[in-house]
Length: 362
Image 1 (cartoon, rainbow, N blue to C red):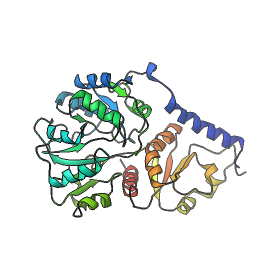
Image 2: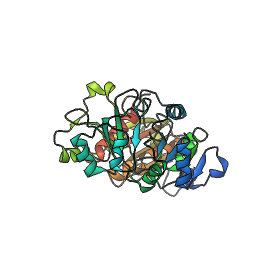
Image 3: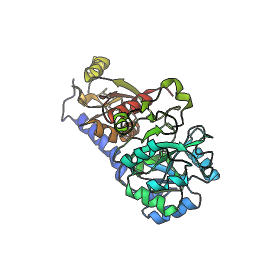
Image 4: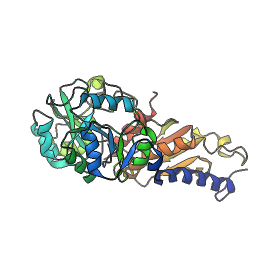
């Protein structure tokens, strides 16, 4: 018998998803090993002591550490399980602070920062020796970003330090866009989490190499290639042939991956073709709600038979919610996720990049 909207089984499935999502809104700070802060000054003091502190930004939550402290940076790599050849981005409180970490500000970098900073942009610059070699994976360049989120800049300013900060998650997992998701991955592995709002953008910053010429887009983000070209028309996308040599995080290793196997589709009818008829019309007794999930811009005709389904209103909405959706379906025990690709316009190019990387075998 085909399941209908309003059925007992459908109601149970919806309650199960809602219960899982509600975990994100519970205050678990009394039951965890990692401190959870509301006080920026307290969090800054911990960073100055060489601690590892996660903090909110507009892109994703970052895991902060003093960028001049080699011992603390090694702890960060261990806490995340991050490969040591994967460079970190250094976060600053103000655009003018670039002199703390870089030996030079190329003209094109100055133009990009004038237009897009503070914001979701990382510029790659020649580094100063004060930045620990572990931050840059031994390279002579460093990625620099000034986040738009005011709490993040207040924290960095309170430390008086350049703060290296990759995404606050276990390496390879979906980035954390809520402090609760950071806690889920890193409780007991890091010293503290500064509470903050859910990330507005939901995917990592755009990274552009400003050391070479022409400037090269290394990692797409909310600031698109077209946006960069509006400032520097010569900007080029990354050539895949040199991917192994680039000085940007997020390119050479498995990233953003849920536990479930991820399948990419372009149109919702492909999902209907891939989904066996038997699975779409299983009996109430045999139906396995945690079997598969779907997210995209179009709604499939058999939503009731999916363990979880999200239909987003736009590519911006999709990008903002993607990583948390991956985490929700992992909590449900979903084994297969079908994700719809989006038009490669604006943030769509970056969203498609994350989907492709999330779908790659580990």
